[in-house]
Every structure is written in structure tokens, then in C-alpha cells.
Length: 173
Image (tube, rainbow, N blue to C red; front, side, top):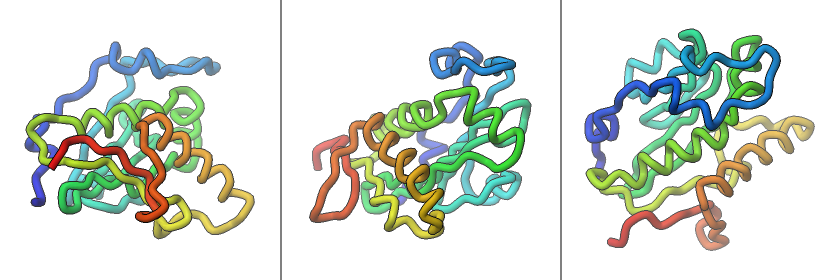
């Protein structure tokens, strides 16, 4: 059931108005006209200055540079969130402290999953501890877990003990 999500969505650049609800109090404030959100697949992702996984990556950029990413994979009707990550360095910090990026990604991933032309039945995210490549140091583990749990709450994902994942039904079979 693999589908080209980017093609099906007819992905378009977002305007400054799209980002305004997510802008946080920061000094200096982010200029929403310099923000961009890209849905990347395949070799397009090689330009990212951030690690990625899965089939698709949504990249939040500021002044043309990646500040945060979320990676997704479509598996048998499930859209699976495999990664939420702010980019290291000054630009990443500027983006992750100046915009509610977890909420933005939760809203955008939900919008993708709910798109009527896509055969997505469920939006899923494994428990953070089960996601390959996440930080193992305990000191950073709590921060990572907090971000993933915040995403689950924002995207209305409910925990399934049986599947060891956060899940939201999108469409009936």
C-alpha cells in the first residue's frame, strides 16, 4: 500500500501566516516570513544538516537552514512517526526556542494523515524507548521522552499496551 505522500498531497510552501500561531516569545523574535516547512523524500533529504530516518522527513527551516525535523514512514496503512529532533547548534536552538515546533509538527503530521486522498488508517508512534537511534544517556533521555509524549498528546495519540505504541485511528478499514 505504499503511496507517494508528497505527490498525493501536492505539497506547497507555507506562507508567513501559517507559522504565526506557533511563534513563541523569544529575543529576538523569529520572523515568520523567513520560516519554511518542507516535505522531503529520497535524495532530497541529503541536503538536510540533520540525521533522518524513514521514508519522508518534514523539515522546519529558518532562513533556509534546517532547525528541526520529523521523519515518517508509511507502513501498511499506518503513518509512523520515527523521529522528532531539533538540530544542534545556533540555528537549531533559535528555531526550537522561537517556535512551538512539537505542536507544529503534530498538527502537520495529523493533517497529512487525515488527507482524504491518502490511504492512511492510523497515525502511530512507537514508545520513545523503542525508537532506534534515540539518545541513551539518562540525563537527555527525560528531555527526549518529554518531547515525544508532548507530540503524542498534541496529535491525540492514545497509548496501546498491546502494540507498545501511541496510536490514533484516522479512517475505518
